[in-house]
Length: 99
Image 1: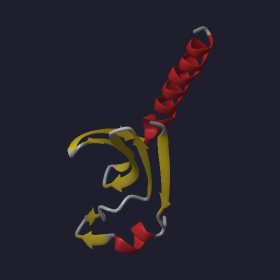
Image 2: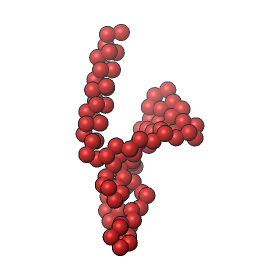
Image 3: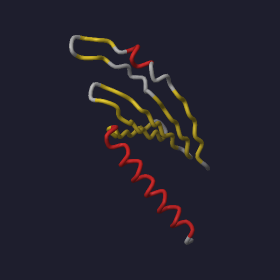
């Protein structure tokens, strides 16, 4: 079965409107700034750009029949993470042509 990709763009300004001041701490909404959903066989991947009091981060969740695993990637590391994924993709592309 192939991969089906679904995009959903959320308003970026939505976060500023939903921030609440609590003394020196800000409480952030749980809503992502941007989200992507990828369907592949029996798995669903959720890729969410979120923000908290420590900054922006990417949250990647794999859902397999109700069982979820999640990793968090800080925004500062995102370019390296994407480069590594691109390297793996390039390797797969080269590997496929030799079969």
